[in-house]
Length: 393
Image (cartoon, rainbow, N blue to C red; front, top):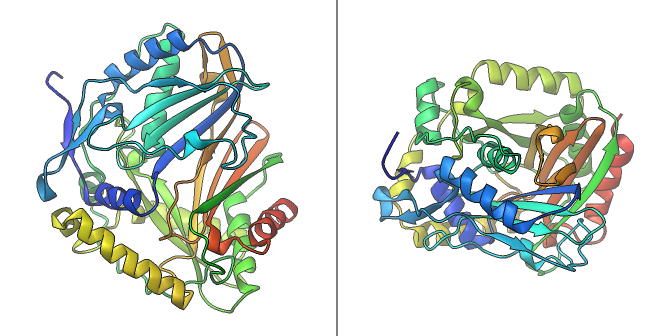
């Protein structure tokens, strides 16, 4: 296919643009720890080659309202070397590079960071959530690694949007849930703005992991108040078109309610049934009208909604539990370096009171929790993480 790559800005991606205004940076940030040598020139050449094959990594935003589009800038994402950071790999401390915003109109909207002089040399792929989801990011990442090994890139040029893909699956419409859900760490406390994240690592391959996590976190919520606990579970819709190669945002969600007598097996069965019915592809009537509302107005409305939810202590969902799955680390190697561990850092949002990412490799599970600071005070984040550490079997 020839011509300059472009695709529409979907209503969902427009909401990520708003999210970036509210709590920047709205990023997917994938951290690979490894061993070997990180040769910056080899990485720059590999990123340039992979980005030529996947122009969705070079996008900038153009147009107004409903005519907004992503357009290939033709400029490869930068590869930036960061030395002597002193970063622990478990939080914001000594990591200002994780908070750096990326300009959607000027670009770049993706970048690669190399931290070469550490015990475990790290590589961090940063992709703006308005241009990619996790699956889209890995489409690009795997091609970067192929280029590092001297292999041909697979490439992707699909211009399908999440809305178009969802409509093609004909799953119908959903009715939004009322704003009635408990946050897992209780009501807000204090006035400190911003977010905190922490990571824990478990060994083994726990059975019904997502179900166990949902129940443990729901019990945390009930320590503070009785009420409804419901989680969003992001789902990659690429599974419905196995030949589809795309870097775009192609994930929507299914929703699970946890009751006090719910079992992990019931949660697994519920998710399986919803996926069978393609319920992750259900839209809400009027969604697409968001494309025609100015960003500033959407941002102002979102601020009002967030403040109202904080005051009430009830949210549209209790949180998001995102299972990234097991990453084949044997594919993350090249140029004299290979990955030994992977973990993503959750995107930040006051709209969601609790965001847990789950991933793993071989016999290892990583869980990374992000909370607004106002919901993490008085040891509440540590309490959740400790319950997960001790409660998962």
